Length: 82
Image 1 (cartoon, helix red, strand yellow):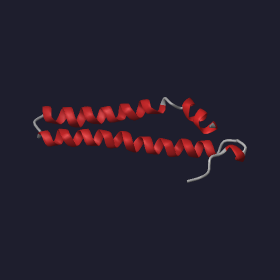
Image 2: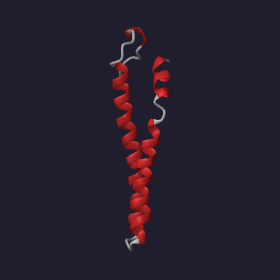
Image 3: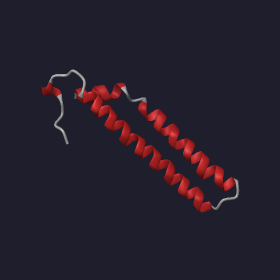
């Protein structure tokens, strides 16, 4: 429960993840086909953008969890480690 409250304070982390994915999609999926590359490159760009968002979300989640576990909270309130 305390972890959920703590995570909500950092809810804006999704903004830079989504922005990074959007830049990749714009550059690869939209930009390269306009420059004459094939449509398959555009499709790959969409998957690359999704992969970017997914990967950054995992990295941020790990960093925030480590940050939470290092905070000065009573051990009784910490969730069990996975």
